[in-house]
Length: 318
Ligand SMILES: C[S@@+](CC[C@H](N)C(=O)[O-])C[C@H]1O[C@@H](n2cnc3c(N)ncnc32)[C@H](O)[C@@H]1O
Image (cartoon, rainbow, N blue to C red):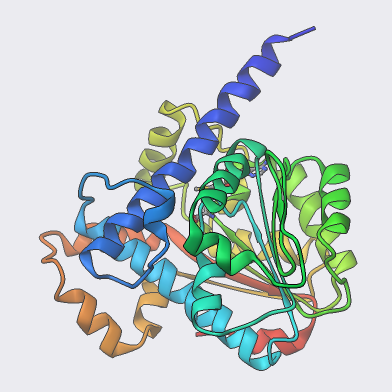
């Protein structure tokens, strides 16, 4: 029987899935303007309208920070590590790493089957994408929602269902003892707090050498945050995890209360001031900003939180 709640949840899941299309088209727009290089994003998303300069700078700051942190983790582990991107959407990180010759032992992406089925299709029909997940000695296994290459695995799963996540992690050949970087860009906020807490605890229990990088909203309690929340809710997105996004401290706490040994959190105002000055100077020339205050407000409402089960990874910072 289909209950009213089921209908609401399916509708809301569709709206959450649509946030990936938004994120991807914002990334494509910023890449087209020259904020950073990404030869792969165009294969996943069509050209769209131009976004506001603040949005482009926001995506630049988010993408370059992830690049710096991921590259550091690969460097300090000498590539003897795994990367797991949860709620990966159409992220292109894997292809950048291959292009730059940065190899890892395993690279796994999870998202709703409604997203992974589209990503599978794009990879399958694009030589440049398919080549990078293929290996002479290993046949790529592909079905509607999943793609399993030797190193790269793309898997459809609802992250709120821990039993399914456990099964998919097993199928992905992830090794619990290897240093493992978990990435989540604007994902946990869409999950009920109890479900994201369960997931974080499960990861901490199982992966004893893990680093988690979480990028998402903070300061949702003020007027600007309220407007952000209302905009998303108007589009049908239930921000079930918003309570963990009140401050950088609530972001840190969600990890510390769920089995992580340490955590750090910094809003994007702080992150911006730590980015390489030459890069900041370069992108500041791309578009003029009429409203510096708007950019500052936007940066005050997003943060990077890193958490670790192994103290060695506390050094992976900007
Ligand atoms: C805002 S998009 C971000 C996509 C990507 N991380 C990026 O930054 O480009 C959020 C993503 O999280 C995924 N997501 C949210 N809740 C999920 C869940 N319960 N299970 C699987 N994926 C989920 C959505 O489908 C979507 O792809």
